[in-house]
Length: 85
Image 1 (cartoon, helix red, strand yellow):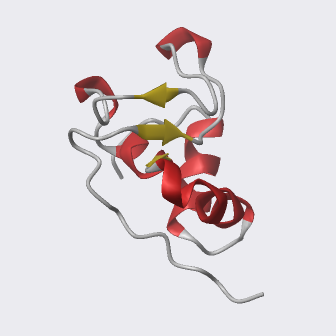
Image 2 (cartoon, rainbow, N blue to C red; image 1 turned 45 degrees about the horizontal axis):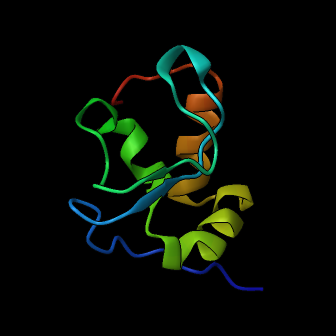
């Protein structure tokens, strides 16, 4: 299987799904749906882990594929490194 590219569809005012690890301290739960886009407090490093519902399956694959931006963001957040670098 090739590396599919997840494109960022309109994630400002349309529904998005969080595909990152659970982070109870921040109120993030895997596969939680946000109906009005990415919440302001999760923009930045977290934003790459919010995808449109149509892209959910492809993004889940990308999250487990080494070398993808989604995988790098997932690993970084799982290690509680929430810096923008």
